[in-house]
Length: 352
Image: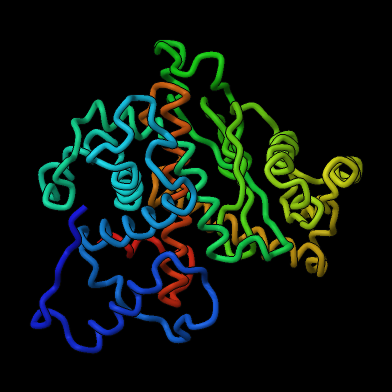
Protein backbone atom coordinates (compact mmCIF):
# COMPACT_ATOMS: atom_id res chain seq x y z
CA UNK A 1 0.00 0.00 0.00
CA UNK A 2 1.24 3.51 -0.83
CA UNK A 3 1.09 6.00 2.04
CA UNK A 4 -0.33 9.51 1.65
CA UNK A 5 2.22 12.33 1.78
CA UNK A 6 1.47 15.80 3.12
CA UNK A 7 3.47 18.93 2.41
CA UNK A 8 4.34 21.33 5.26
CA UNK A 9 2.59 24.11 3.35
CA UNK A 10 -0.79 22.38 3.62
CA UNK A 11 -0.64 21.65 7.34
CA UNK A 12 0.01 23.98 10.23
CA UNK A 13 3.07 23.18 12.30
CA UNK A 14 1.14 22.27 15.47
CA UNK A 15 -1.31 20.06 13.61
CA UNK A 16 1.55 18.37 11.80
CA UNK A 17 3.27 17.66 15.13
CA UNK A 18 0.09 16.19 16.64
CA UNK A 19 -0.40 14.06 13.53
CA UNK A 20 3.18 12.75 13.76
CA UNK A 21 2.68 11.81 17.44
CA UNK A 22 -0.59 10.10 16.58
CA UNK A 23 1.00 8.01 13.83
CA UNK A 24 3.75 6.92 16.23
CA UNK A 25 1.17 5.62 18.71
CA UNK A 26 -0.76 3.54 16.17
CA UNK A 27 -0.66 -0.12 17.17
CA UNK A 28 0.32 0.64 20.78
CA UNK A 29 -1.78 -0.22 23.82
CA UNK A 30 -3.74 2.54 25.55
CA UNK A 31 -1.79 3.61 28.63
CA UNK A 32 0.76 6.06 29.94
CA UNK A 33 1.71 8.79 27.49
CA UNK A 34 -1.72 9.15 25.91
CA UNK A 35 -2.98 12.74 25.48
CA UNK A 36 -5.08 14.15 28.31
CA UNK A 37 -6.87 16.80 26.27
CA UNK A 38 -8.82 15.74 23.15
CA UNK A 39 -6.78 15.97 19.95
CA UNK A 40 -8.82 17.43 17.06
CA UNK A 41 -7.56 15.54 14.03
CA UNK A 42 -10.57 13.56 12.80
CA UNK A 43 -12.26 16.64 11.32
CA UNK A 44 -9.39 16.98 8.84
CA UNK A 45 -9.13 13.33 7.83
CA UNK A 46 -9.82 12.45 4.22
CA UNK A 47 -10.82 8.98 3.05
CA UNK A 48 -7.24 8.44 1.89
CA UNK A 49 -5.85 9.23 5.32
CA UNK A 50 -8.42 6.98 7.01
CA UNK A 51 -7.40 4.16 4.67
CA UNK A 52 -3.76 4.76 5.61
CA UNK A 53 -4.42 4.88 9.36
CA UNK A 54 -6.55 1.74 9.33
CA UNK A 55 -3.96 -0.06 7.21
CA UNK A 56 -1.18 0.73 9.70
CA UNK A 57 -3.22 -0.66 12.63
CA UNK A 58 -4.45 -3.71 10.71
CA UNK A 59 -1.06 -4.58 9.22
CA UNK A 60 0.65 -4.26 12.62
CA UNK A 61 -1.96 -6.54 14.24
CA UNK A 62 -1.85 -9.01 11.33
CA UNK A 63 1.93 -9.40 11.55
CA UNK A 64 1.82 -9.82 15.34
CA UNK A 65 -0.97 -12.40 15.21
CA UNK A 66 -0.16 -14.40 12.08
CA UNK A 67 3.29 -13.44 10.88
CA UNK A 68 3.16 -14.55 7.24
CA UNK A 69 0.29 -14.37 4.75
CA UNK A 70 0.65 -18.12 4.20
CA UNK A 71 -1.38 -18.57 7.43
CA UNK A 72 -4.65 -18.08 5.52
CA UNK A 73 -3.61 -19.08 2.01
CA UNK A 74 -5.06 -22.11 0.23
CA UNK A 75 -3.30 -21.53 -3.10
CA UNK A 76 0.41 -22.04 -3.94
CA UNK A 77 0.89 -18.25 -3.96
CA UNK A 78 1.78 -17.60 -0.30
CA UNK A 79 2.70 -13.94 -0.79
CA UNK A 80 0.13 -12.23 -3.04
CA UNK A 81 0.89 -8.66 -4.13
CA UNK A 82 -2.52 -7.53 -2.94
CA UNK A 83 -1.99 -8.39 0.71
CA UNK A 84 -4.43 -9.68 3.32
CA UNK A 85 -3.93 -6.47 5.32
CA UNK A 86 -5.10 -4.43 2.33
CA UNK A 87 -8.17 -6.66 1.89
CA UNK A 88 -9.14 -6.24 5.56
CA UNK A 89 -8.42 -2.49 5.44
CA UNK A 90 -10.78 -1.91 2.53
CA UNK A 91 -13.50 -4.01 4.20
CA UNK A 92 -13.23 -2.14 7.53
CA UNK A 93 -13.12 1.36 6.03
CA UNK A 94 -16.13 0.43 3.90
CA UNK A 95 -18.06 -0.27 7.10
CA UNK A 96 -16.84 3.00 8.66
CA UNK A 97 -18.01 4.84 5.54
CA UNK A 98 -21.44 3.24 5.81
CA UNK A 99 -21.19 1.39 2.51
CA UNK A 100 -24.25 -0.85 2.07
CA UNK A 101 -22.73 -2.98 -0.70
CA UNK A 102 -19.24 -4.50 -0.49
CA UNK A 103 -19.09 -4.74 -4.28
CA UNK A 104 -20.12 -1.10 -4.63
CA UNK A 105 -17.46 -0.05 -2.14
CA UNK A 106 -14.82 -2.08 -4.02
CA UNK A 107 -15.77 -0.21 -7.21
CA UNK A 108 -15.47 3.13 -5.42
CA UNK A 109 -12.00 2.25 -4.15
CA UNK A 110 -10.97 1.07 -7.62
CA UNK A 111 -12.05 4.36 -9.21
CA UNK A 112 -10.95 6.88 -6.59
CA UNK A 113 -8.14 5.32 -4.52
CA UNK A 114 -6.26 3.05 -6.89
CA UNK A 115 -3.00 4.86 -6.13
CA UNK A 116 -3.19 3.46 -2.59
CA UNK A 117 -3.95 -0.08 -3.82
CA UNK A 118 -2.10 -0.51 -7.13
CA UNK A 119 -2.48 -4.32 -7.00
CA UNK A 120 -6.21 -4.30 -6.19
CA UNK A 121 -7.83 -7.52 -7.46
CA UNK A 122 -11.19 -7.84 -9.22
CA UNK A 123 -14.46 -7.80 -7.31
CA UNK A 124 -15.18 -11.54 -7.27
CA UNK A 125 -11.71 -12.40 -6.01
CA UNK A 126 -11.89 -9.59 -3.44
CA UNK A 127 -15.22 -10.97 -2.20
CA UNK A 128 -13.81 -14.47 -1.82
CA UNK A 129 -10.76 -13.20 0.05
CA UNK A 130 -12.84 -11.11 2.46
CA UNK A 131 -14.91 -14.18 3.36
CA UNK A 132 -11.77 -16.28 3.77
CA UNK A 133 -10.33 -13.63 6.12
CA UNK A 134 -13.38 -13.49 8.41
CA UNK A 135 -11.49 -15.39 11.12
CA UNK A 136 -8.54 -13.01 10.76
CA UNK A 137 -10.81 -9.99 11.26
CA UNK A 138 -12.32 -11.60 14.35
CA UNK A 139 -8.88 -12.18 15.88
CA UNK A 140 -7.88 -8.60 15.06
CA UNK A 141 -11.06 -7.48 16.84
CA UNK A 142 -9.99 -9.40 19.93
CA UNK A 143 -6.48 -7.94 19.65
CA UNK A 144 -7.99 -4.44 19.68
CA UNK A 145 -9.76 -5.30 22.96
CA UNK A 146 -6.35 -6.06 24.41
CA UNK A 147 -4.95 -2.74 23.13
CA UNK A 148 -7.88 -0.88 24.72
CA UNK A 149 -7.48 -2.71 28.08
CA UNK A 150 -11.12 -3.80 27.90
CA UNK A 151 -10.33 -7.15 29.53
CA UNK A 152 -9.39 -5.34 32.76
CA UNK A 153 -13.02 -4.37 33.35
CA UNK A 154 -15.13 -6.74 35.51
CA UNK A 155 -18.53 -5.30 34.59
CA UNK A 156 -20.39 -6.16 31.38
CA UNK A 157 -23.71 -5.18 29.82
CA UNK A 158 -25.84 -7.49 27.65
CA UNK A 159 -28.63 -6.91 25.15
CA UNK A 160 -29.77 -8.07 21.71
CA UNK A 161 -30.98 -6.41 18.52
CA UNK A 162 -32.86 -7.78 15.51
CA UNK A 163 -31.52 -8.05 11.97
CA UNK A 164 -34.30 -8.17 9.40
CA UNK A 165 -33.58 -10.05 6.17
CA UNK A 166 -37.04 -9.71 4.62
CA UNK A 167 -40.09 -7.54 5.33
CA UNK A 168 -42.93 -9.48 6.95
CA UNK A 169 -45.30 -8.71 4.07
CA UNK A 170 -42.84 -10.22 1.58
CA UNK A 171 -41.90 -13.41 3.41
CA UNK A 172 -44.57 -15.71 1.93
CA UNK A 173 -44.05 -14.42 -1.62
CA UNK A 174 -40.25 -14.40 -1.43
CA UNK A 175 -37.77 -17.25 -1.61
CA UNK A 176 -37.26 -16.76 2.15
CA UNK A 177 -33.52 -16.12 2.24
CA UNK A 178 -31.61 -17.99 4.93
CA UNK A 179 -34.29 -20.68 5.07
CA UNK A 180 -33.72 -23.02 8.07
CA UNK A 181 -31.53 -20.32 9.68
CA UNK A 182 -33.65 -17.16 9.95
CA UNK A 183 -37.00 -17.21 11.74
CA UNK A 184 -39.80 -14.99 12.98
CA UNK A 185 -38.99 -13.09 16.15
CA UNK A 186 -40.28 -10.26 18.32
CA UNK A 187 -38.36 -7.13 19.34
CA UNK A 188 -39.70 -5.88 22.69
CA UNK A 189 -37.86 -2.54 22.41
CA UNK A 190 -39.60 -1.70 19.12
CA UNK A 191 -42.75 -3.69 19.92
CA UNK A 192 -42.76 -5.31 16.49
CA UNK A 193 -42.23 -8.67 14.85
CA UNK A 194 -39.53 -9.36 12.28
CA UNK A 195 -38.14 -12.13 10.09
CA UNK A 196 -34.40 -12.65 10.43
CA UNK A 197 -31.77 -13.03 13.11
CA UNK A 198 -30.85 -11.75 16.55
CA UNK A 199 -27.41 -10.51 17.50
CA UNK A 200 -26.73 -11.03 21.22
CA UNK A 201 -24.13 -8.49 22.33
CA UNK A 202 -22.00 -8.06 25.45
CA UNK A 203 -20.13 -4.78 25.97
CA UNK A 204 -17.99 -3.26 28.69
CA UNK A 205 -19.25 -0.24 30.64
CA UNK A 206 -17.99 2.11 27.91
CA UNK A 207 -20.09 0.39 25.25
CA UNK A 208 -17.25 -1.44 23.48
CA UNK A 209 -18.35 -4.89 22.20
CA UNK A 210 -16.56 -7.72 23.99
CA UNK A 211 -18.52 -10.74 22.74
CA UNK A 212 -21.41 -11.47 20.40
CA UNK A 213 -23.53 -14.35 19.15
CA UNK A 214 -25.79 -14.77 16.13
CA UNK A 215 -29.03 -16.70 16.56
CA UNK A 216 -32.35 -17.20 14.80
CA UNK A 217 -34.91 -14.48 15.44
CA UNK A 218 -37.12 -16.54 17.76
CA UNK A 219 -34.37 -17.36 20.30
CA UNK A 220 -35.05 -15.73 23.67
CA UNK A 221 -32.48 -13.31 25.07
CA UNK A 222 -31.83 -15.51 28.12
CA UNK A 223 -30.94 -18.53 25.96
CA UNK A 224 -28.79 -16.38 23.68
CA UNK A 225 -26.77 -15.14 26.65
CA UNK A 226 -26.20 -18.70 27.89
CA UNK A 227 -24.86 -19.78 24.48
CA UNK A 228 -22.72 -16.63 24.29
CA UNK A 229 -21.17 -17.28 27.71
CA UNK A 230 -20.49 -20.85 26.65
CA UNK A 231 -18.55 -19.56 23.62
CA UNK A 232 -16.65 -17.07 25.77
CA UNK A 233 -15.77 -19.81 28.26
CA UNK A 234 -14.21 -21.85 25.44
CA UNK A 235 -12.00 -18.91 24.47
CA UNK A 236 -11.02 -18.03 28.02
CA UNK A 237 -11.97 -20.45 30.82
CA UNK A 238 -11.35 -17.86 33.53
CA UNK A 239 -13.06 -14.81 32.01
CA UNK A 240 -16.69 -15.78 32.76
CA UNK A 241 -15.79 -16.33 36.42
CA UNK A 242 -14.60 -12.74 36.74
CA UNK A 243 -17.55 -10.75 35.45
CA UNK A 244 -20.91 -9.36 36.51
CA UNK A 245 -23.47 -8.68 33.79
CA UNK A 246 -26.17 -6.00 33.69
CA UNK A 247 -29.29 -6.87 31.69
CA UNK A 248 -32.86 -5.75 31.09
CA UNK A 249 -36.09 -7.54 32.01
CA UNK A 250 -35.44 -10.24 29.40
CA UNK A 251 -32.76 -11.71 31.68
CA UNK A 252 -34.65 -11.52 34.97
CA UNK A 253 -35.34 -14.52 37.20
CA UNK A 254 -33.71 -15.94 40.32
CA UNK A 255 -33.56 -19.46 38.90
CA UNK A 256 -31.98 -18.17 35.70
CA UNK A 257 -29.39 -16.12 37.61
CA UNK A 258 -28.58 -19.14 39.79
CA UNK A 259 -28.04 -21.33 36.73
CA UNK A 260 -25.70 -18.80 35.15
CA UNK A 261 -23.70 -18.65 38.35
CA UNK A 262 -23.53 -22.46 38.61
CA UNK A 263 -22.62 -22.99 34.97
CA UNK A 264 -20.26 -20.05 34.33
CA UNK A 265 -19.62 -18.32 37.66
CA UNK A 266 -21.28 -15.16 36.30
CA UNK A 267 -23.28 -12.76 38.45
CA UNK A 268 -26.44 -11.67 36.60
CA UNK A 269 -27.81 -8.25 37.58
CA UNK A 270 -31.11 -7.81 35.73
CA UNK A 271 -33.61 -4.97 35.85
CA UNK A 272 -36.31 -5.93 38.33
CA UNK A 273 -39.84 -6.40 36.97
CA UNK A 274 -41.58 -5.84 40.29
CA UNK A 275 -41.64 -2.33 41.64
CA UNK A 276 -44.29 0.23 42.56
CA UNK A 277 -44.73 2.68 39.65
CA UNK A 278 -45.97 5.33 42.07
CA UNK A 279 -42.65 5.25 43.93
CA UNK A 280 -39.22 6.35 42.66
CA UNK A 281 -36.89 3.73 41.23
CA UNK A 282 -34.83 1.77 43.71
CA UNK A 283 -31.08 2.34 43.78
CA UNK A 284 -30.60 -1.11 42.22
CA UNK A 285 -32.93 -0.46 39.27
CA UNK A 286 -31.40 2.98 38.76
CA UNK A 287 -27.90 1.49 38.61
CA UNK A 288 -28.93 -1.23 36.15
CA UNK A 289 -30.89 1.31 34.12
CA UNK A 290 -27.84 3.55 33.69
CA UNK A 291 -25.76 0.60 32.54
CA UNK A 292 -28.50 -0.34 30.08
CA UNK A 293 -28.29 3.07 28.39
CA UNK A 294 -24.67 2.35 27.46
CA UNK A 295 -25.42 -0.71 25.36
CA UNK A 296 -28.47 1.03 23.89
CA UNK A 297 -26.10 3.72 22.62
CA UNK A 298 -23.84 1.04 21.13
CA UNK A 299 -26.76 -0.60 19.31
CA UNK A 300 -27.92 2.82 18.12
CA UNK A 301 -24.50 3.49 16.57
CA UNK A 302 -24.55 0.05 14.92
CA UNK A 303 -27.95 0.81 13.42
CA UNK A 304 -27.21 4.37 12.33
CA UNK A 305 -23.59 4.17 11.13
CA UNK A 306 -23.16 0.51 10.18
CA UNK A 307 -26.68 -0.37 8.93
CA UNK A 308 -26.53 -3.38 11.24
CA UNK A 309 -30.28 -4.02 11.53
CA UNK A 310 -30.62 -5.11 7.90
CA UNK A 311 -28.45 -6.96 5.39
CA UNK A 312 -28.07 -7.44 1.64
CA UNK A 313 -26.28 -10.76 2.13
CA UNK A 314 -27.97 -13.86 0.76
CA UNK A 315 -26.00 -16.54 2.59
CA UNK A 316 -25.20 -17.18 6.23
CA UNK A 317 -21.45 -17.07 5.55
CA UNK A 318 -21.82 -13.70 3.81
CA UNK A 319 -23.92 -12.33 6.65
CA UNK A 320 -21.41 -13.50 9.27
CA UNK A 321 -18.58 -11.86 7.30
CA UNK A 322 -20.52 -8.58 7.26
CA UNK A 323 -21.23 -8.79 10.99
CA UNK A 324 -17.60 -9.50 11.91
CA UNK A 325 -16.41 -6.64 9.68
CA UNK A 326 -18.87 -4.22 11.33
CA UNK A 327 -17.88 -5.12 14.89
CA UNK A 328 -14.16 -5.05 14.03
CA UNK A 329 -14.60 -1.61 12.43
CA UNK A 330 -16.53 -0.47 15.51
CA UNK A 331 -13.74 -1.56 17.86
CA UNK A 332 -11.02 -0.05 15.67
CA UNK A 333 -12.86 3.28 15.57
CA UNK A 334 -13.09 3.28 19.36
CA UNK A 335 -9.38 2.48 19.58
CA UNK A 336 -8.60 5.52 17.41
CA UNK A 337 -10.88 7.66 19.60
CA UNK A 338 -8.96 6.56 22.69
CA UNK A 339 -5.64 7.43 21.06
CA UNK A 340 -7.01 10.92 20.40
CA UNK A 341 -8.58 11.23 23.89
CA UNK A 342 -11.96 11.52 22.17
CA UNK A 343 -15.20 10.04 23.58
CA UNK A 344 -15.84 6.44 22.59
CA UNK A 345 -18.88 5.68 20.43
CA UNK A 346 -18.31 8.94 18.49
CA UNK A 347 -17.63 7.07 15.27
CA UNK A 348 -19.50 8.86 12.50
CA UNK A 349 -16.92 11.68 12.43
CA UNK A 350 -14.03 9.35 11.51
CA UNK A 351 -14.94 9.18 7.82
CA UNK A 352 -15.99 12.64 6.65
